[in-house]
Length: 480
Ligand code: NAI
Ligand code: MG
Image (cartoon, rainbow, N blue to C red; front, side):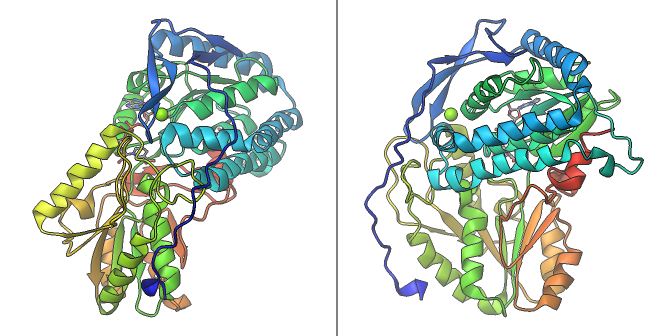
């Protein structure tokens, strides 16, 4: 039984693949590295030790305009004229290049963002190349993707991505955009631009025609300039609900196509007949994967009241076995919090939980002295009205609540403005289906969590956004 075992101590096993990081990165526009118009640069840090990794160009409206013009030219001059089967070869080539350089991408992702190397190596990078391979296959079969059999590209796509899955989410947007014949301007998150910049190097080496993929770095102002640019045909955004709402207002009436993948407060429902070992591992994956920096993180656990004590005890024991520390150590389960700001946000919400009367259970692990860290935690005695039960914490903090009947569990799960994902644990197929059909969530996992595949569409209900990424539904969002 997991509860009886003490944590096994492994010797550190640090990933040693060397990466080259330039001291300074410019924008990648029209196939060339271009200095920012403002001349301004800002640092990107390693959140595990607060050291500066590189200086990054701060993009402004002039840089964005230059990138959009390059993307338009790339579209008119090269990409729209290319035979779809030729487009497919380029997209496939990017998948190959990612696979060949996967270790380098994984190390860079971990250094720049703080996630454990095991995750960037086994999840982020393989999923990213899988998206290129999947969409390469579609490029010359698009007539089967649209009802009238006449697929048309949209033109120039503006993509704004967050810091939780920097390379993967960029790929979710680049791969279908290119496969469908669009060109793209990508704006990575300000704390995690390095893998997108390495991808730009790979794109240059793969000899994609100039302007097909452009990259402008910077903060929210750069993103806003991209949203406002009149010659962008589609904006695809992944990030906070707050910024998503702002983008929706900014694009209203502009004729721009819009896809939003926003926040979540996903529910995990555990019925008393569930295989509990599986449920505990599923819960751990749902909330502690990537330090809880996951839009679909299962951050609300609803357990049937008869099994609450057992689940709480098992989870308390499991917390102690999670290894928190150096993200480059292959044994690490929980890495660094992405930024000081995010760490403060987590601490503030946890304090609100304590103030409102919930009970906090925290791993007794030691946290490193430098960098941004948060011990894996959960709350019991949570009322559905507490902020920790309603707001996205985006950290390794779970709120546990109880229910009596399936209908009550469903009602509680649906009782928030979000609807990104959900997880159900039960031995009964009938109960699982009954629940899944009534949950307002874009993805519902059964007896598992966080399973992804490029052929399976991902996206939300309500304030979690609209539009899909992956699968046929995701593909159609990049076509007229
Ligand atoms: P954010 O939504 O501000 O940032 C996401 C991206 O949008 C970044 O590239 C950023 O530079 C850009 N951006 C910011 N303001 C913009 C604007 N006005 N117009 C266009 N682009 C803009 O997210 P932030 O501040 O990094 O995190 C805040 C909270 O958002 C987190 O604590 C978490 O709760 C949530 N979040 C959710 C994500 C998800 O995957 N659903 C991802 C990141 C954050
Ligand atoms: Mg960084």
